[in-house]
Image (cartoon, rainbow, N blue to C red):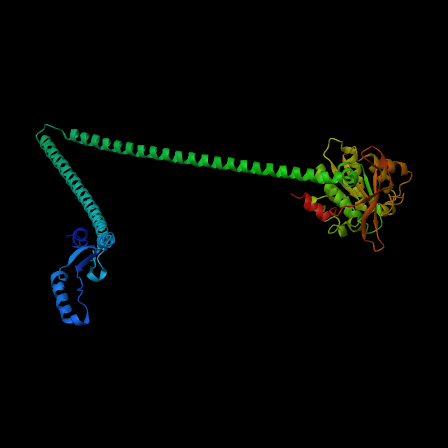
Length: 470
């Protein structure tokens, strides 16, 4: 017998034994044995012998009989009588219940469960064994059938070949006819083989086509998804940039009446002057950064004879914008080339062209170094850059004819055509970030001269660069 069958029989046997025998008991209840033993009244000293005799007689008559009943019944009925029997006349003996071993009944379901699982496993193994046996039988039948069919075909071919030989030998069939039939059979086999190869190739081609189409569709979907994500990211970035630009523009409008906003958005030439260390070049750089950000203007030139020193200081955030730098290392001939290039630029450009920015530093020294060309610059700055859509920023030490390149007779034109910001420094040549603005027109249309202004704490080139960078 297999292990599962033996385990099944054992489980069933244990379960039946537990249910039928181990849980049985003759008396599962507690009993009480009651004897009535009345006491004699002859209990005096003078009646000793008479007491013993009479008590023995009573005991032999009543006390030797014992009556058994349920303890619960005795306890409940004893106290129902109105005149109960005195306790001295009754002798009780408790007979405890016999243990029924009711716990053995738990063995029955466990044993039955074990028997069921064992029988299920046995049935499963028998089913698999029957399945494999049936498959082996089917395989044997197939092999036998193939063998018989091959044998039959071989015998048929042999018989036909023998008959063909006899027909040829007896003249009923020519050799050419036999060869022709063999040739046609060979051709038929070749055609069949070729057709099968073509069908296989066609199916494979269709599978390859489906695969390529799926890959193409997947690539197209991935590309479209990537383009959509890129468009969403660009849109979100554009929205964030617009919100940031609007917030910064509103900050400029709200600061001290909006003079900084007008200097950044407007295109009137700006002249920044003051003592050394007054933060003039850095202020010009800040204005150039903001103009490039809000006007989408390109910084095209910086004319500065000290550009080699300022490129890592005041111009450090402007050099990456790739402007044309003129005059580094005190090269005044190159500075002059920058002036001539500006003249050509202003004569060719119109208001329809995209806005640009040009910075002119050291106008005071320019008047001394280029006495023939320098006086022509300021008149051009006042008249030409507006029509050429050029934001011009000039830096000098004083607002005098010499400080403006040696120009003469331009005081009224300078007042009418420029914004002039004078910045202050202390005795240690340190910036106070305070100044005076002239030439500005407020929101009511009134021109204000010598308006006291201050530069906000965030108006620093590094701070502005962090604010406007992508």
